[in-house]
Image (cartoon, rainbow, N blue to C red; front, side, top):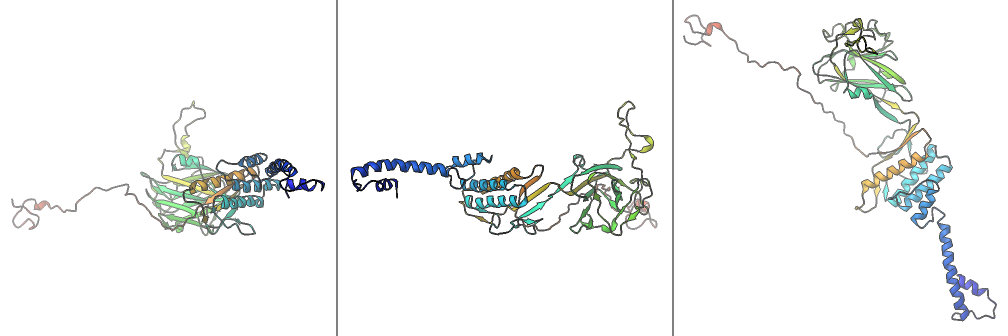
Length: 439
């Protein structure tokens, strides 16, 4: 029943309210204005609710109450889903994994309807993200204490070039100790024989028994089982690697507790002092290319310096070696678990796309994941590094290609000939028949 009929029904029976009467026409005029007023009231009422707001400006005003602005490119349906989920999550605390996961799934559900793209299965009733690293590229994953690869910036700045007795300080900021990975490469003009890498912080030592000429690469790593791996130009050389613990500088080279099987070098949390030098070992080529005897940690490359310099730049004569050029190029890295960090990994391979081909799919992808990151930044706990990472869909075929440089020393070319002095001039009954000339 509309406004006009409601007013006519309330009049006494003596009044003529039939269609076409004067009273019917008069109340119809008032009823039209009242109906327009009702529509305005209803519109104002609906503009106060996220799910029913008509205009984009009304949605933006509602989002401004919670400091969640609508982005210029963002469709209204996607913004409704994001705003509703974010407000509900903030009311529930907005710092736990379950709440953050609910918001991310809600935004991806809104993207499915607004952008026509689907990245993962959104129909499950349980947790959408697997705990820990995913086994397959299509599985979303939640990783706490996200792993990150670290390198020493000072070592990288000098391209890893190290002189004998070089000391490298590595700062480990991870949650727990990590195994160290290393790549030792021979350089031009130098010989690397039996390189020794020591962590002076915990007394662990690693030695490679062998030669490392220019262009050859020794890789020390750790497999998934936590076992040490060693390869020289792709060839397994674990039988030439020796590790131990309880190292003491200046003492004979015999670690207190030798390992029955080689173990990875461990980096402790905080500062780690590493020491690298070639050591002369019995039965190994080492003359003029190694340190004879186990050196003290104070021994270093000799440098000239003036007495007046403060601090003095030179070295003491009885604690120095004649300065030597770099003998290796060293690369060190490790994987540390970042404290106070988490990462949501979303498969970036689109499962479904229903929009016209004219729309920029790549731009939509970048905008959506930027939106997810902004939402997580808004809700994550203070001081916690939280990220939403798109995991690319890829297929890997293992293959190794090795390039070998030319030998650094090229010998002189020569032709194999045998000269006979007697064959310079032919003499009867004396000169050889072949290789003679007639006089």
